[in-house]
Length: 209
Image (cartoon, rainbow, N blue to C red; front, side):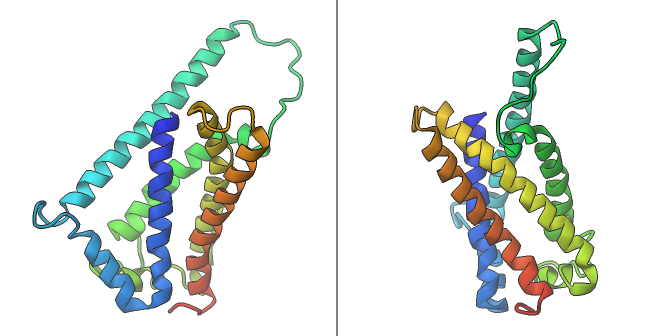
């Protein structure tokens, strides 16, 4: 679970950095999107790298979900008799909502692919023009899309806040340094949330458009 989560975090960070290129203008952003399709050429055919990446990410997501389900089953088997009185669970809000946060993220990923990858639910959906598609997606009159995006990104932040700390512990990093792990995870989660939310709010406020 830690390894699959770690690979997903690396993609999330790389994807965020790519998204921020929108602040350099339409030309740079569209060129970046086109470049992604040519990575590995001529050794690989066009878009092969993207499909390899998508396959790896899909496997990581399925492994992450499957491992989470397995851990839940193990926990249930470890306590076959339910507590008559269960004391209040100690831990952060992020830790207590990991499963629901994961469900929200899976639903968001499906919508995000249909919106800005496939383009079927995007109001513009022009292939090869990602800048225009992003701008059309987060217009002020589509505030509900921006709200949904913001809620999903915040859910991602909570998920990362707990997940990163647990990942570091599982991989043997910072053993016995819970405070340091917690602070590191919180800082990374905040940076990612701010980075992702900066794009839709910049479009909505007219900074990008």
